[in-house]
Image (cartoon, rainbow, N blue to C red; front, top):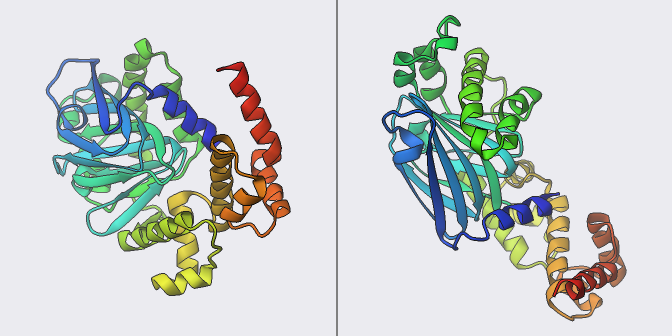
Length: 336
Protein backbone atom coordinates (compact mmCIF):
# COMPACT_ATOMS: atom_id res chain seq x y z
CA UNK A 1 0.00 0.00 0.00
CA UNK A 2 2.75 2.44 0.92
CA UNK A 3 4.55 1.72 -2.34
CA UNK A 4 1.32 2.45 -4.25
CA UNK A 5 0.96 5.76 -2.38
CA UNK A 6 4.53 6.71 -3.23
CA UNK A 7 4.03 5.90 -6.92
CA UNK A 8 0.85 7.97 -7.01
CA UNK A 9 2.71 10.95 -5.57
CA UNK A 10 5.57 10.41 -8.03
CA UNK A 11 3.04 10.61 -10.87
CA UNK A 12 1.47 13.77 -9.46
CA UNK A 13 4.86 15.46 -9.21
CA UNK A 14 6.43 14.17 -12.44
CA UNK A 15 6.53 17.70 -13.91
CA UNK A 16 8.17 19.24 -10.83
CA UNK A 17 11.96 19.48 -11.08
CA UNK A 18 14.21 18.05 -8.38
CA UNK A 19 15.03 20.68 -5.79
CA UNK A 20 11.84 22.61 -6.51
CA UNK A 21 8.86 23.28 -4.27
CA UNK A 22 6.10 24.73 -6.44
CA UNK A 23 3.70 27.06 -4.59
CA UNK A 24 0.31 27.72 -6.19
CA UNK A 25 -1.77 30.44 -4.51
CA UNK A 26 -5.55 30.58 -4.56
CA UNK A 27 -7.76 33.21 -2.96
CA UNK A 28 -11.20 32.29 -1.67
CA UNK A 29 -11.70 35.64 0.03
CA UNK A 30 -9.63 38.82 -0.35
CA UNK A 31 -7.69 39.83 2.75
CA UNK A 32 -4.19 40.58 3.97
CA UNK A 33 -1.49 37.90 4.09
CA UNK A 34 -0.85 35.63 7.04
CA UNK A 35 1.52 32.80 7.59
CA UNK A 36 1.30 30.04 5.00
CA UNK A 37 0.55 31.84 1.74
CA UNK A 38 2.98 34.73 1.87
CA UNK A 39 5.44 34.50 4.73
CA UNK A 40 7.32 31.23 4.40
CA UNK A 41 10.30 29.99 2.41
CA UNK A 42 11.39 26.41 1.90
CA UNK A 43 14.33 24.41 0.57
CA UNK A 44 14.55 20.73 -0.36
CA UNK A 45 16.67 18.25 -2.28
CA UNK A 46 13.47 16.50 -3.33
CA UNK A 47 10.40 18.01 -4.93
CA UNK A 48 6.94 19.04 -3.94
CA UNK A 49 3.82 21.10 -4.54
CA UNK A 50 1.97 23.41 -2.16
CA UNK A 51 -1.51 24.62 -3.10
CA UNK A 52 -2.22 27.46 -0.69
CA UNK A 53 -5.66 28.94 -0.11
CA UNK A 54 -6.60 32.19 1.66
CA UNK A 55 -9.79 30.79 3.15
CA UNK A 56 -11.21 33.37 5.57
CA UNK A 57 -9.78 36.40 7.39
CA UNK A 58 -7.18 34.85 9.67
CA UNK A 59 -7.15 31.40 8.06
CA UNK A 60 -4.84 29.88 5.46
CA UNK A 61 -4.88 26.25 4.32
CA UNK A 62 -2.41 24.43 2.09
CA UNK A 63 -2.54 21.08 0.35
CA UNK A 64 1.00 19.68 0.50
CA UNK A 65 2.33 16.87 -1.71
CA UNK A 66 5.99 16.09 -1.05
CA UNK A 67 8.51 13.58 -2.42
CA UNK A 68 11.67 14.19 -0.39
CA UNK A 69 13.48 13.03 2.74
CA UNK A 70 13.28 16.50 4.27
CA UNK A 71 12.13 20.09 3.67
CA UNK A 72 13.66 23.03 5.53
CA UNK A 73 11.10 25.73 6.35
CA UNK A 74 11.35 29.29 7.57
CA UNK A 75 8.45 31.50 8.58
CA UNK A 76 7.62 34.18 11.12
CA UNK A 77 7.59 33.04 14.76
CA UNK A 78 4.21 34.64 15.44
CA UNK A 79 3.12 33.56 18.91
CA UNK A 80 -0.58 34.08 18.26
CA UNK A 81 -0.65 31.93 15.10
CA UNK A 82 -1.74 28.34 15.59
CA UNK A 83 -0.52 25.74 13.09
CA UNK A 84 -2.10 22.38 12.36
CA UNK A 85 -0.99 19.62 10.03
CA UNK A 86 -3.15 16.65 9.04
CA UNK A 87 -1.21 13.78 7.51
CA UNK A 88 -3.12 11.93 4.81
CA UNK A 89 -0.35 9.52 3.75
CA UNK A 90 3.31 8.84 4.43
CA UNK A 91 4.94 10.04 7.65
CA UNK A 92 6.07 13.50 8.75
CA UNK A 93 7.96 14.80 11.76
CA UNK A 94 9.52 17.93 13.20
CA UNK A 95 12.22 18.74 15.73
CA UNK A 96 10.51 21.56 17.60
CA UNK A 97 11.94 24.44 19.58
CA UNK A 98 12.75 23.30 23.10
CA UNK A 99 14.18 19.95 22.04
CA UNK A 100 10.98 17.95 21.52
CA UNK A 101 10.13 15.99 18.38
CA UNK A 102 6.76 14.87 17.05
CA UNK A 103 5.90 12.39 14.31
CA UNK A 104 2.65 11.75 12.48
CA UNK A 105 1.33 8.79 10.54
CA UNK A 106 -1.66 8.66 8.22
CA UNK A 107 -4.71 10.21 9.87
CA UNK A 108 -2.81 11.96 12.68
CA UNK A 109 -2.98 15.68 13.47
CA UNK A 110 -0.26 17.99 14.86
CA UNK A 111 -1.20 21.12 16.81
CA UNK A 112 1.35 23.77 17.84
CA UNK A 113 2.08 27.47 17.93
CA UNK A 114 4.01 28.93 15.00
CA UNK A 115 6.83 29.96 17.33
CA UNK A 116 7.71 26.28 17.90
CA UNK A 117 8.62 25.61 14.26
CA UNK A 118 9.62 28.98 12.77
CA UNK A 119 12.95 27.53 11.58
CA UNK A 120 12.46 23.81 11.33
CA UNK A 121 12.84 20.81 9.09
CA UNK A 122 9.84 18.74 8.07
CA UNK A 123 11.22 15.21 7.99
CA UNK A 124 9.66 12.50 5.85
CA UNK A 125 11.01 9.13 7.08
CA UNK A 126 9.34 7.21 4.21
CA UNK A 127 10.48 9.72 1.57
CA UNK A 128 7.00 11.05 0.82
CA UNK A 129 3.93 12.57 2.44
CA UNK A 130 0.77 14.45 1.64
CA UNK A 131 -1.45 16.41 3.93
CA UNK A 132 -3.15 19.68 4.73
CA UNK A 133 -1.55 22.48 6.74
CA UNK A 134 -3.80 25.08 8.37
CA UNK A 135 -2.66 28.37 9.92
CA UNK A 136 -5.00 30.25 12.25
CA UNK A 137 -4.17 33.86 13.13
CA UNK A 138 -6.21 33.91 16.33
CA UNK A 139 -6.38 37.71 16.97
CA UNK A 140 -7.52 38.26 13.37
CA UNK A 141 -10.10 35.50 13.79
CA UNK A 142 -11.38 37.12 16.98
CA UNK A 143 -12.02 40.34 15.06
CA UNK A 144 -13.56 38.54 12.09
CA UNK A 145 -15.31 35.57 13.67
CA UNK A 146 -17.40 33.75 11.02
CA UNK A 147 -21.08 34.53 11.52
CA UNK A 148 -22.03 30.87 11.99
CA UNK A 149 -19.63 30.64 14.97
CA UNK A 150 -20.50 33.87 16.75
CA UNK A 151 -23.17 32.27 18.97
CA UNK A 152 -21.06 29.23 19.93
CA UNK A 153 -19.11 31.03 22.64
CA UNK A 154 -15.79 30.25 20.94
CA UNK A 155 -12.96 31.96 22.85
CA UNK A 156 -9.94 32.61 20.63
CA UNK A 157 -7.85 33.96 23.51
CA UNK A 158 -8.44 30.73 25.43
CA UNK A 159 -7.55 28.76 22.30
CA UNK A 160 -4.27 30.67 22.13
CA UNK A 161 -3.50 29.83 25.75
CA UNK A 162 -4.49 26.19 25.27
CA UNK A 163 -2.47 25.47 22.14
CA UNK A 164 -0.02 28.26 21.21
CA UNK A 165 1.44 28.70 24.68
CA UNK A 166 1.68 24.98 25.49
CA UNK A 167 4.01 22.29 24.18
CA UNK A 168 3.26 20.92 20.69
CA UNK A 169 0.89 17.97 20.73
CA UNK A 170 -0.59 15.37 18.41
CA UNK A 171 -4.01 13.78 18.06
CA UNK A 172 -4.06 10.20 16.82
CA UNK A 173 -6.13 9.15 13.82
CA UNK A 174 -9.83 8.92 14.66
CA UNK A 175 -13.22 9.08 12.90
CA UNK A 176 -13.70 12.72 13.94
CA UNK A 177 -10.55 13.83 12.13
CA UNK A 178 -11.48 11.74 9.09
CA UNK A 179 -14.88 13.45 8.90
CA UNK A 180 -13.24 16.87 8.95
CA UNK A 181 -10.33 16.34 6.57
CA UNK A 182 -11.09 13.54 4.12
CA UNK A 183 -13.81 15.49 2.21
CA UNK A 184 -11.15 18.12 1.50
CA UNK A 185 -9.09 15.56 -0.43
CA UNK A 186 -12.10 14.15 -2.25
CA UNK A 187 -13.44 17.56 -3.35
CA UNK A 188 -12.96 18.55 -6.98
CA UNK A 189 -10.31 21.28 -7.42
CA UNK A 190 -12.87 23.94 -8.36
CA UNK A 191 -14.84 23.21 -5.16
CA UNK A 192 -11.96 23.07 -2.71
CA UNK A 193 -12.39 26.68 -1.66
CA UNK A 194 -16.02 26.16 -0.68
CA UNK A 195 -15.21 22.95 1.20
CA UNK A 196 -12.34 24.67 3.01
CA UNK A 197 -14.60 27.47 4.20
CA UNK A 198 -16.98 24.91 5.69
CA UNK A 199 -14.41 22.52 7.12
CA UNK A 200 -12.11 25.05 8.80
CA UNK A 201 -15.11 26.27 10.79
CA UNK A 202 -15.84 22.68 11.79
CA UNK A 203 -12.17 22.41 12.75
CA UNK A 204 -12.48 25.45 15.02
CA UNK A 205 -15.42 23.83 16.80
CA UNK A 206 -13.38 20.64 17.18
CA UNK A 207 -10.47 22.58 18.74
CA UNK A 208 -12.84 24.38 21.11
CA UNK A 209 -13.97 21.00 22.50
CA UNK A 210 -10.52 19.37 22.50
CA UNK A 211 -8.93 18.71 25.89
CA UNK A 212 -5.88 21.03 26.09
CA UNK A 213 -4.20 18.57 28.47
CA UNK A 214 -4.12 15.16 26.78
CA UNK A 215 -3.43 12.14 28.96
CA UNK A 216 -0.59 10.97 26.75
CA UNK A 217 1.40 13.09 24.32
CA UNK A 218 3.42 11.42 21.56
CA UNK A 219 6.57 13.50 21.98
CA UNK A 220 10.19 12.44 22.01
CA UNK A 221 13.47 14.24 22.49
CA UNK A 222 14.97 15.40 19.21
CA UNK A 223 18.31 13.81 20.25
CA UNK A 224 16.55 10.44 20.44
CA UNK A 225 14.95 10.76 17.01
CA UNK A 226 18.22 11.90 15.43
CA UNK A 227 20.04 8.93 16.94
CA UNK A 228 17.37 6.57 15.61
CA UNK A 229 17.79 8.08 12.14
CA UNK A 230 21.54 7.40 12.36
CA UNK A 231 20.73 3.78 13.24
CA UNK A 232 18.36 3.63 10.26
CA UNK A 233 21.09 4.93 7.93
CA UNK A 234 23.53 2.31 9.19
CA UNK A 235 21.09 -0.58 8.78
CA UNK A 236 19.91 0.46 5.30
CA UNK A 237 23.45 1.08 4.00
CA UNK A 238 24.61 -2.36 5.12
CA UNK A 239 21.75 -4.64 4.16
CA UNK A 240 24.09 -7.61 3.96
CA UNK A 241 24.45 -7.41 7.78
CA UNK A 242 21.91 -8.39 10.38
CA UNK A 243 22.12 -6.07 13.39
CA UNK A 244 20.58 -7.03 16.71
CA UNK A 245 18.69 -4.55 18.89
CA UNK A 246 21.22 -5.14 21.67
CA UNK A 247 24.17 -4.47 19.36
CA UNK A 248 22.69 -1.19 18.12
CA UNK A 249 21.69 -0.19 21.63
CA UNK A 250 25.28 -0.52 22.87
CA UNK A 251 26.78 1.16 19.81
CA UNK A 252 24.53 4.22 20.00
CA UNK A 253 24.13 4.35 23.79
CA UNK A 254 20.36 4.12 23.74
CA UNK A 255 18.12 1.92 25.87
CA UNK A 256 16.72 -1.06 23.92
CA UNK A 257 13.09 -0.30 24.80
CA UNK A 258 13.58 3.38 23.88
CA UNK A 259 15.19 2.38 20.60
CA UNK A 260 12.25 0.16 19.67
CA UNK A 261 9.65 2.72 20.76
CA UNK A 262 11.23 5.73 19.01
CA UNK A 263 12.01 3.76 15.83
CA UNK A 264 8.34 2.80 15.52
CA UNK A 265 7.29 6.41 16.20
CA UNK A 266 9.57 7.74 13.45
CA UNK A 267 9.17 5.03 10.79
CA UNK A 268 5.74 3.67 11.63
CA UNK A 269 6.72 0.00 12.04
CA UNK A 270 8.73 -2.17 14.46
CA UNK A 271 12.38 -2.47 13.44
CA UNK A 272 12.23 -6.10 12.28
CA UNK A 273 9.14 -5.63 10.12
CA UNK A 274 10.42 -2.35 8.69
CA UNK A 275 13.76 -3.86 7.67
CA UNK A 276 12.05 -6.89 6.16
CA UNK A 277 9.88 -4.67 3.96
CA UNK A 278 12.84 -2.42 3.15
CA UNK A 279 14.91 -5.40 1.99
CA UNK A 280 12.04 -6.62 -0.19
CA UNK A 281 11.62 -3.19 -1.79
CA UNK A 282 15.35 -3.14 -2.53
CA UNK A 283 15.06 -6.67 -3.94
CA UNK A 284 12.26 -5.48 -6.24
CA UNK A 285 14.52 -2.74 -7.56
CA UNK A 286 17.36 -5.22 -8.21
CA UNK A 287 14.99 -7.65 -9.94
CA UNK A 288 13.77 -4.86 -12.21
CA UNK A 289 17.09 -3.19 -12.95
CA UNK A 290 19.59 -6.07 -13.09
CA UNK A 291 19.96 -9.58 -14.45
CA UNK A 292 21.64 -10.80 -11.28
CA UNK A 293 20.73 -14.29 -10.12
CA UNK A 294 18.17 -14.46 -7.34
CA UNK A 295 20.61 -16.20 -4.98
CA UNK A 296 23.11 -13.32 -5.50
CA UNK A 297 20.44 -10.74 -4.64
CA UNK A 298 19.49 -12.78 -1.58
CA UNK A 299 23.10 -12.76 -0.35
CA UNK A 300 23.51 -8.99 -0.82
CA UNK A 301 20.39 -8.44 1.25
CA UNK A 302 21.53 -10.52 4.20
CA UNK A 303 19.66 -13.79 3.56
CA UNK A 304 21.56 -17.01 4.26
CA UNK A 305 19.68 -18.99 1.62
CA UNK A 306 17.61 -18.27 -1.47
CA UNK A 307 14.75 -20.20 0.14
CA UNK A 308 14.56 -17.85 3.15
CA UNK A 309 14.73 -14.84 0.83
CA UNK A 310 11.94 -16.16 -1.40
CA UNK A 311 9.76 -16.86 1.63
CA UNK A 312 10.22 -13.30 2.98
CA UNK A 313 9.69 -11.79 -0.48
CA UNK A 314 6.40 -13.65 -0.94
CA UNK A 315 5.13 -12.58 2.49
CA UNK A 316 5.56 -8.93 1.50
CA UNK A 317 4.98 -8.93 -2.28
CA UNK A 318 2.45 -11.80 -2.44
CA UNK A 319 4.53 -13.51 -5.15
CA UNK A 320 7.92 -15.17 -5.55
CA UNK A 321 10.95 -13.17 -6.78
CA UNK A 322 11.03 -15.11 -10.06
CA UNK A 323 7.33 -14.36 -10.63
CA UNK A 324 7.89 -10.66 -9.89
CA UNK A 325 10.75 -10.39 -12.39
CA UNK A 326 8.84 -12.26 -15.08
CA UNK A 327 5.70 -10.15 -14.59
CA UNK A 328 7.68 -6.89 -14.70
CA UNK A 329 9.43 -7.87 -17.94
CA UNK A 330 6.21 -9.02 -19.56
CA UNK A 331 4.64 -5.66 -18.77
CA UNK A 332 7.72 -3.95 -20.21
CA UNK A 333 7.31 -5.78 -23.51
CA UNK A 334 3.63 -4.79 -23.67
CA UNK A 335 4.42 -1.14 -22.89
CA UNK A 336 7.77 -0.37 -24.54
